[in-house]
Image (cartoon, rainbow, N blue to C red; front, side, top):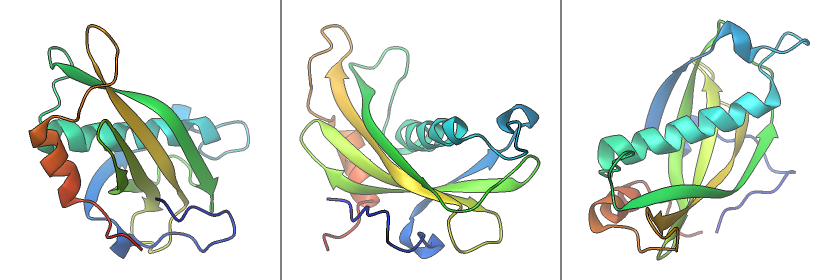
Length: 151
């Protein structure tokens, strides 16, 4: 279970075993001159799926299972803006039979405290029937490698 509480301190880099560099884009900024809140969810999605593709054998086009996002949350800690270089840290906070909840945080490169942090939950389903399906063994092993020890 995640220790996600709005009153806790921002996440730190050392709590994340996998990293995805992200290039901010001009279109990520909103009228207030910083990355719009909805864009952070795109960063979360990109980071989680990149891990699954690179390490868990996720085949987006022909694999037997797909991951559907069923829940997400984000706490915004500090503004970021194009063209700042950023990275997403990824870990697994909870691993079930057919679901996984990731802890994901966005960091400005060179800064130890997260600009945003939150959770992102995939439920894996059969590609054809869209019914929950067990996480395939290769993917489960990859997710276990970045799982946070229970607190």
